[in-house]
Image (cartoon, rainbow, N blue to C red):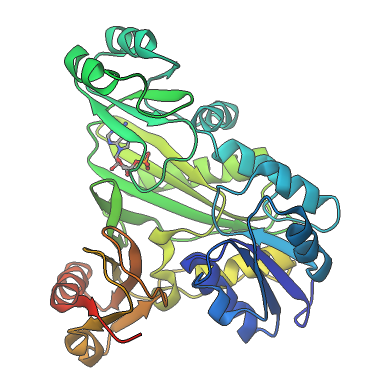
Length: 383
Ligand code: AMP
């Protein structure tokens, strides 16, 4: 057991790292954050700030030296870096799961190992491969970069040969391999978040129902509107993944629910945007549960206390030194909690914060969250 008072190292300094650091500090851990950005949201709540590239071996060595356990808050840290830290101090979840989730093709292989159903797909390396995938699977397809895509980036909808031709007119849109996947006509998108500790003890959060806009999460509601049978199917899948990789920490599985069953879309070896409402709505937050799992502390039951909805607050334009206007309606609502990540600059689609509303009626919390978010606007502030 890594006891309170020890130092937790976090690779990555975004909002997930920040929200992880807050309960860690509450429990008396010291927090060290390594991230390249000068204004990383997690730096403001860290005891040790290491501003450096993930490839900077000296800086990574310093993080390993001061930490008793290390975790990561996003996938795009080189698995090699994580392996190097692992040689000195535990990294949870480890490099193996990280490597599998960094690459959509390896991720599909892991789904196969865990016996998890996925949409029909092909590996695509070039224009001819895309044509072949169109012929074999039938359009429309979603073409996704194997590595590095995030929040709908590195993803294209290919209906037919004309789309394929247009996308590859001047060569591939980006370097590297692709996954071409049949577009799924889903009823709902859901995610499941599970934490497993060093002893194999596992807790699953209630399922989250997610609505994306332009490939980016817009709204999460909980409970998800799906049948008990589907729910237990999804929970079993999540546990199968956790057992297959010997998970220590958090795993998020994003899925499509179709009329004929569920299909895994994506895995993340970390806390997740769809789990933000656990902070106010569940018996433990995903962040505290993750901390408990990686430190070997007892896990808490992860039950929903009240229906909840979460709306992401995204940037809509380029602004420096922002302020948030129109917060009064949310702040007057006793069930609403506003989270801003401390990002000083706003860009279109950048995740700046989120708003969670808890209440008694699952539809009403969604309307309230949407209505409050409507009144808010980022504007240019001071310096
Ligand atoms: P991803 O980056 O793979 O999570 O994709 C972002 C979003 O794009 C998903 O949450 C879906 O809303 C949509 N999407 C991705 N893949 C597919 C697919 N095969 N069929 C339909 N929608 C998809």
